[in-house]
Amino acid sequence: MRPEIAVLDIQGQYRVYTEFYRSQEAEKTIILINGSLATTASFAQAVRNLHPQFNVVLYDQPYAGKSKPHNHHERLLTKETEGQILLELIDHFAADQVMSFSWGGACTLMALAHKPRRIERAVVSSFSPVINEPMRDYLERGSKYLSACDRYQVGNLVNDTIGKYLPPLFKRFNYRHVSSLDNHEYAQMHFHIHQVLDHDLEKALNGARAIDIPVLFINGEWDEYTTIADARQFSRHVRNSQFREIRSAGHFLDMENKSACRDTRDVLIDFLKPAQREQRQRYQHVQGQHALAI
Image (cartoon, rainbow, N blue to C red; front, side, top):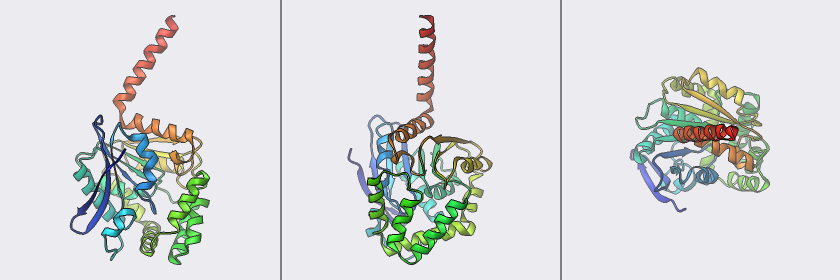
């Protein structure tokens, strides 16, 4: 499964590395938006869950991953700018759906507030409209370590908090990735944290009131940083919102264990392909009646 790779020019200001996993059987295209400190590599399991039922698009923010060599990093990007980049990618790939992970949810909600014409459905995973005490502690410690470029502490912070339920191999990959980022990436994450702590989240929530498509919010049962109870408060801001909890999973959902991976995939397909779900339910209903008749 090899993607089509392109580096796209965005408004003459940014160059964005993209991967397009094309499927001959797919009718819809979905763009995945990753969280802070992450790259396209973090969506390997998500691609397996969605392809070949969908065409899947991955991309790296201009300051991260394989987009890094193509940009000058002269200024820090706001979440609004990331939202504008997402809107450009939606148009370029003629995407029908989007799915975000963690803090990628902020720029996703900002983009959706512009009501992109083609987008029919959206999934926002491991995100919350509330900065609870565990998340605030995580952000404040992260701000301190990022400011000092303390790579050891940044790497361990992720694994000891939001990544606590990841398998050991993934934790090693996480630490190696996070502790080896460039200084400008640490500066970018430090900037994002202060945007969040300085009420930037409110901008995303205020804009979310304009969203009129179905939005599914997915959270892990064990995720104390973005809890399902807190996520349900999105219903105050997004009129057509749905909520699902993944049992026995933390912040990283499908990356943490096999049952969480299976359940996450099933929840996604049920939401993104409602016709397929209804067809399956009708089939199960008929089968059940037939069994009773026998």
